[in-house]
Length: 170
Image 1: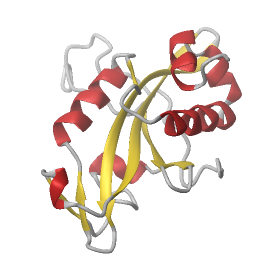
Image 2: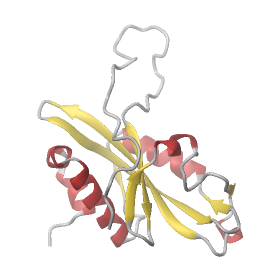
Image 3: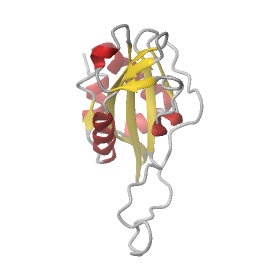
Image 4: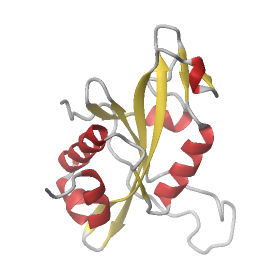
């Protein structure tokens, strides 16, 4: 299992455009603290791919996305997990997770993803929810090990609910 970060690291909160000034941008959603972690279910690798924020991850490039999963009979499952990072007095921590499936047939250059699922789970991640119950157990373990190894301090500062959803105590 390769847990090396490919590309950039996690986004950490920048200045909040909704800090009470009441001007332009109030009420806008900021994605400054969301990073997409991709999980390859066959190789059991996890990596950050910021291109996924705009449906331009290396997995999605050149793929025609369809809205019917049955139209991609030879697909391979990948996971995009929207990881939200916040900061508290103790330091940064993983605030929320929203896992979404990508089903890709690279040879046929076709794939399936549910845009409503991606939008809703990204929103839930931003709100501090942990949505990973739709993932297979092995992929949850890969994600847990990746996040823990990526930054032990953020892992240690995270809620027990999040840690137990990924790496349950035996």
